[in-house]
Length: 384
Image (cartoon, rainbow, N blue to C red; front, side):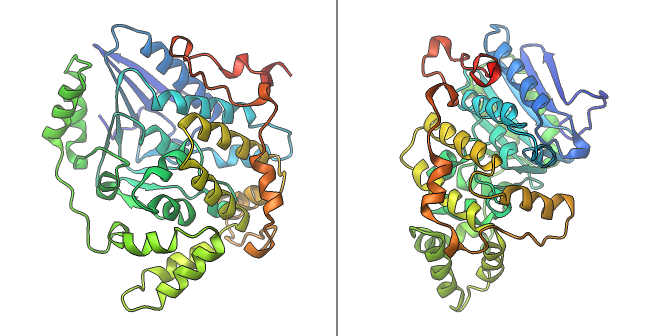
């Protein structure tokens, strides 16, 4: 069942063969199915095996408990802050996997209830079919803690209507299930009570025909109408403000709009922006801007550089300070360095975008015949 907690002690990913369907369940419900190194390894191994298995026709991914996935394991990153490149392997594996999820050869369905954030949402949005419910909550809040929109989201956000991507990436604003469908980040809205029945029906299909799967999901789905208060109804203001070249200009433009009648919704959003890491905001905006002109593989390679340089504290330790304030000490009082947008220097920001030596870049195979090449085990990092 889509909502049940899978009780297989210690198994963080549960893979099942059901006829010609393959089901993978993220199984860390108490941790909101956050993504660890083991989770990434198991996901990649199963997805590669199933893509090559002629008997596997449909792949379903879901989360145990009340979340789909809350994204990367922040405690894992924080605990590794004093050990050089302690999280490099999991980052490499995850971004490499993201490429394969976007380009997967089998029909895929994500059944998404509850939280689907950051890297967790990268297991939702690229699927051929992503089913959301009234309990689904999406966000990309990385910039607020000194990080950046990663796992392919500099590619995906940059392709949303107008400047919605910049808005979501910088503010970490949440979208509900209906808004996800309307924005194009999910394909179908199905009431939560119907999700178990839908899953059962999908498992009985015995087909890889996308048209048949689409039709089956549509039987359970409902048409989407978004509320008048939805952020998606504010596109004109978002496009005007978030089309600016810098975060400072965006905030100034947003402040000007906040003073106009009917724009009270902007005030708390502005407050959140001003509390966020100046470095995280600046890097995120540039990454999404660049993403508009980049391919998926170029975005993933860029994000890999940014992440590794960020975790190495090449220009700032904000990511660790952000995690500390949010999840460790939970004082919600981060001390950013530099403390203001004005003190974030372009020359410094350039450093986190700098290409690595060729053998240290993320390896994303462009050759369909060997598309599963480039694994971490074959990288220069594994043999250092």
